[in-house]
Image (cartoon, rainbow, N blue to C red; front, top):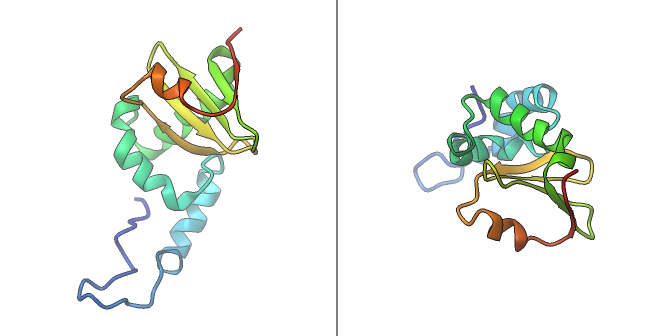
Length: 131
């Protein structure tokens, strides 16, 4: 079960139902915040999972969120950059997996970029090489 961003905001008749996705899914949002504290914005989790989980070899939200968090926890073994705002970008060139993390360590995104190393190289920040 996950937050469906297509529910709640529009009745399908072209009229706004007046119910935002946040209020419509407040219980599930709270559940996600509790269950997946390492994901920065629970509202984006389903979309990221739907778009990127298969590409990084994950099946299920738990697997996707945990894999993203493991990359962050082990970033010293990968190439990573930290920008002026404290955003951390990590890249695993062997498996072609990229993760971006908020300054507090929560995940912003996690996926396999089609441009691979070029995608990572184009990201802002000071480069740190793996140990």
